[in-house]
Length: 173
Image (tube, rainbow, N blue to C red; front, side):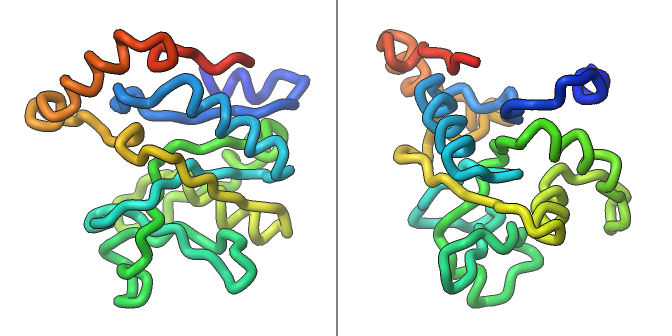
């Protein structure tokens, strides 16, 4: 269904991609992220987080000017890259026209034979387009709840967010 939507003109605007396992993600955060993406004029933007212990997360690698170069997964990171505390939340924003083009160019030439949407970052850089990263103020918003233990840890914050009008906000188109 998503690919069909990309095939239908007009291919304009911003496409947000977020996992369904982030119960603490606030609508206001998505709205601010979408606004950042548009203002940056980026083909791809990454909602990132700054954390004390980045173990297990992909790191946002930036060049000397601060521009995003890549996301490097923990298992493939050098010692220098493992020291980076800015992590990939897995939440992305795309220019719709770029995404429509990039999806067809993403390959599965990797150990798992899978297609990784994050490969679009390399495609954008190769095309000379802007890739940006926007650190969320509260990185806990991007925490997944993939098992019962993670869901138990998130439950108190979900309850607090649900009782707050700001916590239940939705991003507007």
